[in-house]
Image 1 (cartoon, rainbow, N blue to C red):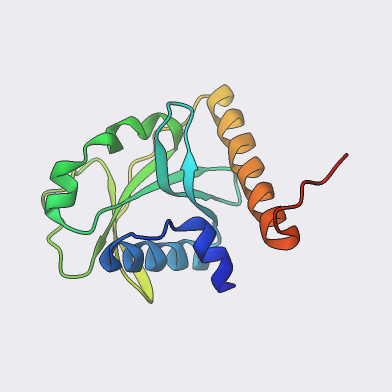
Image 2 (cartoon, one colour):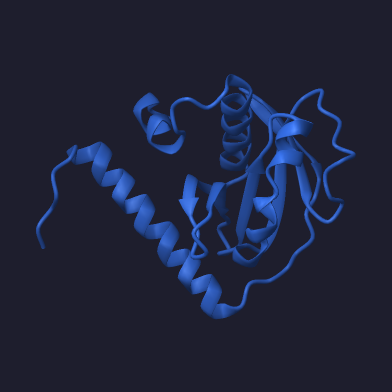
Length: 157
């Protein structure tokens, strides 16, 4: 992946641990055949750390947590489940996964890659919600591509 693409997907100023877990989880998901977008705004105004689109159209959301304190302080992840078929937490290697909800998947990651520690249950999206998320995913992917390929230029139809 081009370094400038990573800058678009990961806000600057994130702590190193969070950046490393995000990078490793993204690499893992891509190796599994998913298309992945970081920082995808959701219809409820929240922003998902990673959203992965499976070849079959399934959607996964991954919430990155760098520590137990980060998990306890930020409970907005419960608002993400309505927008995916499977929900996961990505945590750094060495962090105890026991405090994370058992009804969410768990990915253990570092800057180089990740592994699936616990699969998430399937909670199928309604067709209208799936369509809305797929359109949102595709539109943001296209915007980011154009930003990389053409800079700040706006293409006219």
